[in-house]
Image 1 (tube, rainbow, N blue to C red):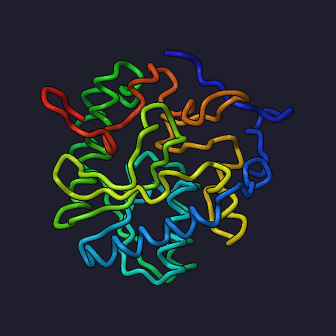
Image 2: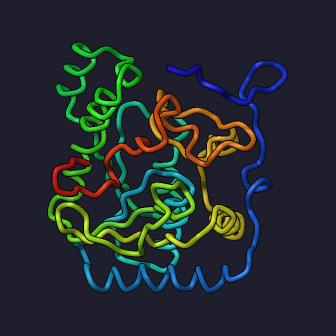
Amino acid sequence: MSEAVSMLSPIGGPATASAIGLYARETAGFAERLASAVERLQAAAARHGAGLVQSTSLGAEDMVITDLIARHKLPIAIATLDTGKLHSETLALIPQIEARYGRKVEVFSPVHDSVIHFVRVRGEKAMYESLALRKECCGIRKLEPLSRMLAGRTGWITGLRREQSANRAVVPFDELDAQGRVKFNALADWSWADVWHYIETFDVPFNALHDQFMPSIGCEPCTRAIAVGEDFRAGRWWWEDESAKECGLHVKKTEGATA
């Protein structure tokens, strides 16, 4: 396993900078992309009604989507996964969303006994030992709770963007997931600058860890700060090959393969 690389302040603590100052830029066509995203969300809500949910990771993109849902008074449920390994800064956004928007956030957690068994048998640091063990951990902490989140739903909304990684470069605006539900990627064509320009313009709450050079934030053991010049998702599962850097939430199953 590679050593974690982080950006540190002179006194040894995590370096900080304003994510808004670093990333927020109004670029050509932003107004059109924003209008299109709203139209996509409105159409999805009209089509699916109570069968639609936003599955939020509480990252910057998902906070934009939550703000759009609330701002345009769309009848879309908001839900998230508490894996049991999230940063406190991530979890702090749940009450912030509820206070700011008056919307209840549905929280889905892993089965307690499954987590206890995994840790007892595999160990607290099993995710570092092999790709198979890391994916087993993700399966228990993310995929199984997601299956309960989506039970009875006909569609779900994500914050996937084409710019995020090579694996996501062809993300469509909507697609069928492995269970035949419609997955809406409302911000698929947005840039990182677009996301932060929206956050700045509308004063959207965001994860404080974004100010510590963490553009992509997952579970605490599997997230680190990135260094200058590193890719957007370099801080996620940094000890693995780039092609493996998905937990399974957004990988479509194909014949002879598993997500």
